[in-house]
Image 1 (tube, rainbow, N blue to C red):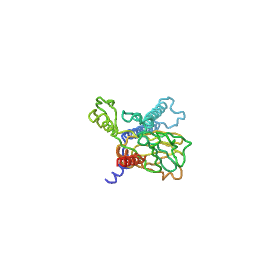
Image 2: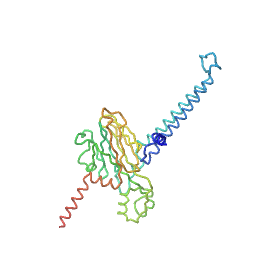
Image 3: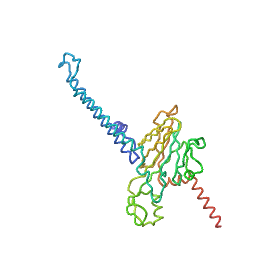
Image 4: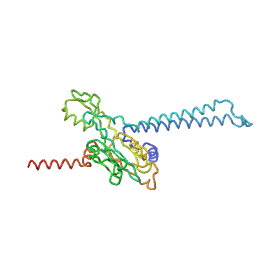
Amino acid sequence: MEFLSNIIEAFSFPELVSQDGGKIDGLVIAVHLLMLVLFVGWIIYYFAALWKFRSTRNPKADYKGVKNKTVTNSVEGAVIVAELILVVVATYYWNFYVNTADDYAHVTAVQKGKKDLHVVRVTAEQFAWNAHYPGPNGLLGEQEKALVGADNPFGIIPDTVSGSDDIVVLKSDIIVPLIYNHRVENPGETDLKPGELLTSTELKAAEAKYGAGAFEAVQDGTVRSVTIDLTSKDVIHSFKVLPLRVCQDAIPGLNIPIHFKPTKTGRYLITCAQLCGDGHARMRGVIKVITEQEWNEWQKAESGEAEQTEQAAVSTDDEKA
């Protein structure tokens, strides 16, 4: 029984920690079922041909073959239909994963304009993964290729409001948040809209602004998308995280957005799925999914806001004294 369970485990899907990952599993199953149908169909055709053209029925070889086009048209039709199914299904899923997430452009009354809040720029290089995050202001700094260097690997334009508190992490864990949505059921007299999605942070800010009982919002079980803006600064790499069902080439000169909705905190292995040099085998990383509260605290700590706040509090206490 243990041997059988090991066989089943070897051919089963890996752990799934993405809300939309089931669609990828469904695609894999659909493709394999299509291949199974084609395989069985071709086997039936093969044995039917052996039976129809057996030597006892056709003792003398016919070098002209079948004169009608029924068989030829059937085979060509089967090939065309199979290719169309694969192209249509694959295009749908590719379009779903590389285009903008459905909630990326979501702007609430509380977080107005902060569209970069859950976007991480990931740049691959031989043989590591580097990450660039928006700071507490929720905005990613603008970039300039001419500024890329050892002290500024992402080419962030200095002295700009958007990039003043950005976070750069080199060759370390890529941190992403697990953020649950709260759907506004009854906005009351507030500026919120029915059906609007709020994170826990946005919900607390809205309650502080309008009052705790001014509106009704419930956690609807969905999570906020994390968008990774992927590129490479040397050769083609491929960002692959199996539990999140993410696999996308990182191509120099192109920024390719991919998105997912994590459902479980933890550390998940990043591998490079594209041969990228003699160190390809050791090009591994970790994507770490943390809670919204941990994410907010991490952002403040990494951007220096926590230290600045503490210093401001100490200065205020000194002035009062």
